[in-house]
Length: 546
Image (tube, rainbow, N blue to C red; front, side, top):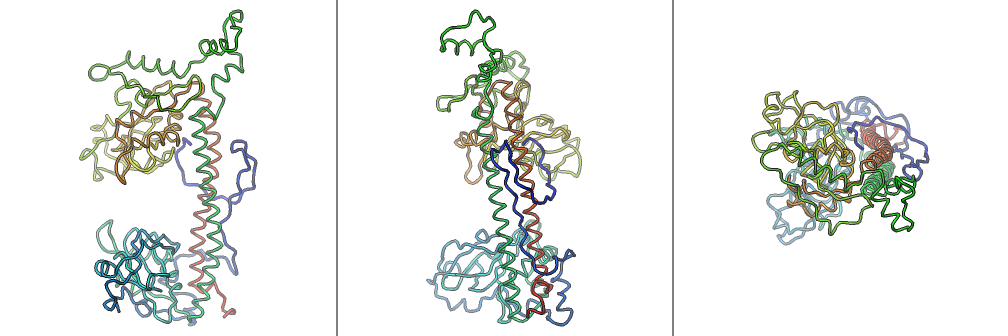
């Protein structure tokens, strides 16, 4: 849970194994690979876009420019549509990446969308032309349109195939990663809003087998994709189950249900009275005596000690101000010898133990360099894990922003984005670094484990309570004051150690399985492109099958 996220190495299938941490058999990771017919997929570079295909080379299939068999952004007949005619409305967000699936955003009257939108009709192929939608594979064959017509984003090309070109064949051709990669290299326009020129698209060669062969190819592609997608769906289910299990582990950790509490162990191990002759006789008085005479430090005693040290060691600006105690009236019950505390109460007694990054002109994108001290940004804060996305500034700039420094072992909390308060631990090998705006450095007191704080902050229990503080429509945010006031359950020190050990033991199993799932999902993407590559080199259907 606390490690830096790394790219997983591909791994094969594993046999089911009983895992005590999960409490059930470790699931077999399904393979995404479809059944194959004939030879293995080719492993060479992109084909079908710049080289043509093997059958075309042999003279079996002609290769023609798209402009010969495709009309791009045709508006023929639009002027004959009545203004009150209903049409499907499909903005960019309604089209999925690579799958070809889409969901119209309702219907619109033609008169309302005739200007400012791209028209298309049943059987046209939508192909995104703008970055990053084109690179991500946004496209679809238009089917089931209201009155057979639709309007959508001007960032779509509407490709209308001629009678000798099957629409699904065209869709699969332009969705090849090799086709999209080549198109990306020929985009024009400003950075961040680059587009594929229409003239470029018109010039691209497409293999053109007979129409019946195109349909055979499409049928084989879709058969293979159906098998592949079944494997991918199974992987997604495993992924979702692992996510739910991770959340359940953190929830149990923060409710005192993951390991025996210190109070329970004190009774089981006989850590009771120092003088056996003074043991109370009644059960009730015995229980009370245990709470006051056990050899462990309770959460309340720990918090009191932390606050005392803060007052005594204060060396900040001005007079010491006691952190506000949390309102516990609406908080759930926690185990005996636990207590509630705010992030601010649990911070180390030193300046800038809770601090956010510089705002405005103090740190801008143009300040970033290829090397130097690191900048911790929102991209680095995963769901409980550190993500190693690099950004650097100069040493001189780093020195000017020294009050925003963050150190190995600190907790960094995202004040912006989905599911706040997302957090992670800064790894040992990071070196000199500062936090950026919306990234809050939190150094816990030396008697509080940073790994326990990280587990608590990422638990659904804490996130649900914090949800009421989040502000910003569509841009959820927590400011520094709100993060300081987040309330966390505080167990005794010894119990924190056991909780962290058990969380890491269980989540290490989850992380191993997640790595296998991720590797197989990447493999599925490669297999999908291999199928398309075989299709447009004439290898997916055999000549003797014609």
